[in-house]
Length: 77
Image (cartoon, rainbow, N blue to C red; front, side, top):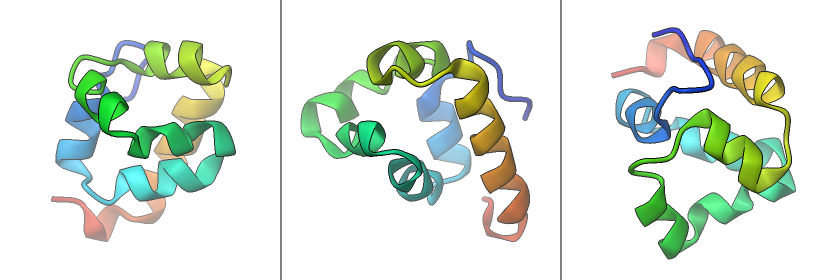
């Protein structure tokens, strides 16, 4: 799965359930992903949305997610 700015976060988490834990550790701004309200919003959220809410660059998020997935390929569903 190629990650783009329009990739749905929920799809990433469905395919890689462990990914959220890594994402939250990536930057303090992403700790909000554990909030109950944010969990509901993530169903429709894209990488672009996460970037806008966190203030982190889209390309940075995509690069980091891609790196994490590559390092943990054996863990994917």
